[in-house]
Image (spheres, helix red, strand yellow):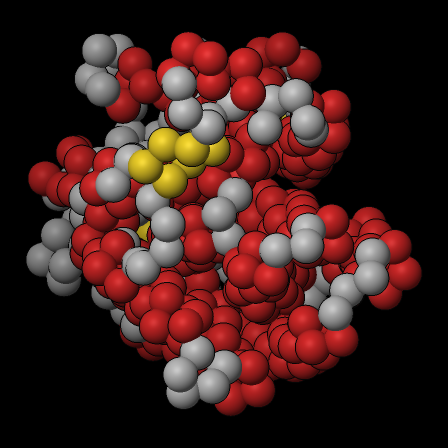
Length: 435
């Protein structure tokens, strides 16, 4: 279940001979990685385009003002929690600027190691012949981890109950980022990729000391007989499956410039607003700390992802690689698990759930699955046409008609935002009746 089609070539292979791993890999992103034999061409590669500051400013206007309004005015947030959130926000802002500065530097290094791709959705145009640096998600992951680790100095004490789970979450994220980078380099078959999040989630599953209970919806209480049900080991199994789903769902809902990072930005913004609302409405100190914990991870994720989006938005200057999709998916999974709002998180992931259901016949082998499940690109018009492959990208094109890559990405991110708003509406109308 992967999103980065690529073909690694040795010095004795030609570009027309696919490797066995390439045949096994069924992917749906818009990059094709290539390893050229002539390293002298690297010095002639032009620098990547500058970051798209206008885009970041527009996105910030949509997400940051509501969040700040809830944090400072709408809810009476405790001073200690608000102080920690602001320290984390300041460190995340610093991480944003560091990421913006490091991406061009890292791009030169990955090009020297022949980690680059060609944009398949621009094939047949001059932009389709440009070498685009690959696997730049490694920069985002590293800066995120540095911010998250340093933040412990300001918030957690040595005997903090949250310290163990916080570091376990960081270990999972680091592990997943490493496996994603290995996938970018070695081109792991998609069947193996299903197992990678299960391995990466082990530190969190072993260190998790929270409750293993679920609140039964009120309409079902008379039938089940209890209001709170202890699932025991099944709850940890559910945590592992959630990590697998979140990681791979980001990975397969791809194929357009800015789509992977854009959906992460939208979901992370919704997570921040949800957490502030829960902190402000709750009187349970432990419940508040759980949602504050989520904010401490979601803010640096949003900041570093915005920095990457400034280079990855159409036309993309860099490709994020499986490194980023695995990192982002695992980060949001641990945020939802340790913040105890996994049901809400799954509604935020509604487009990814639909994309997975549409993809299931091909991913299971019931329907033939091509190597690239991308729409067809017409170089004369610059428009994409949907194919019969079961992805949300293709289904959107078949429903909406031919679109440019940028317009289609905006439609899909708009649908992502609508799904998040729907989640808030459901929680509002079902409050007091459902749970």
